[in-house]
Amino acid sequence: MKSKNTDPMKRFLKKHPFLAETERVHRLVDAAVGTPEPIQLPARAVTKTIAEKLPILQQETYRRRMVRAVYMMQEEVFARIAEADVPPLMQESARGYLAVLKPLRKAAKEEFIIAVLTQDKEAFAALCQRYDLNEGFIRSTIWRIIAALVPAEMKDPDMWNPDRDRPRFSENYCPVCGRQPVIADLRKYRQGRARDLVCGGCGTRWHYTRVGCVYCGNTDLQKMHTLEPEGSDIMRLDVCDACHHYIKTYRGPVDDDTSDFIYRQDWATVHLDLLAEEQGLQKKGNPILE
Image 1 (cartoon, rainbow, N blue to C red):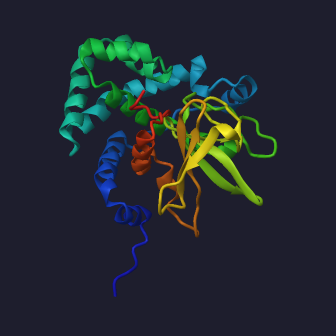
Image 2 (cartoon, rainbow, N blue to C red):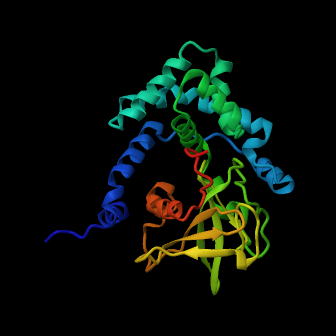
């Protein structure tokens, strides 16, 4: 008698086979990044973020610390991607970036990382244009490295708001890196649900008010609506008619489903992005599409 398949990812891909190749590539890039030792982000950094609403990695001391850590890793990571069984365009893009980095001095190599971390889109675009690099791929991969270097406890929503009735941080940007969210997560709380946001860069989750657009702040419910894909009671699109942006919203867990982590991955619901695109809606938070 065959044992029941209990692997959440295998169950998910069996239900959504069109995402199998995306998952495979995502997994290979994760393997290339590996599991490095996280950088140190002490309690005083959290205190400053809460008091001043200044994300940790936008504080000069910890930004420099992250830049150094990514600098030490990036060439090895891109070399692994260049040799991995990923699509040819990714291999070529990785090799192109490595070729550009090789003759550069340390400060010049760090310019790419600093532009990504500070979200200076114009500076990063100019660098990539100067060297004819794949902007979306390079940027998103650097964010994958950053995410691996952020301590796990910093990504936990309870770190930022242990008491949801008195939230300490409830901004529409990530408390760790400052990026905008890419997914909303409705968690069970008392008799209803509370909303967490999920950073598309470093993967941090944090509390946000239950009602309103997470991008423009619109709270007029007459200017908001939802799109619910047929046959899905897990994910929906929360749409703001004021700014024409949307956020994918996870409404789990369902029946003690153990696949929660999957639905907090932007790649796992790319079909919802296609639905939104058909409606003329705009996406935010994804580092590839900036």
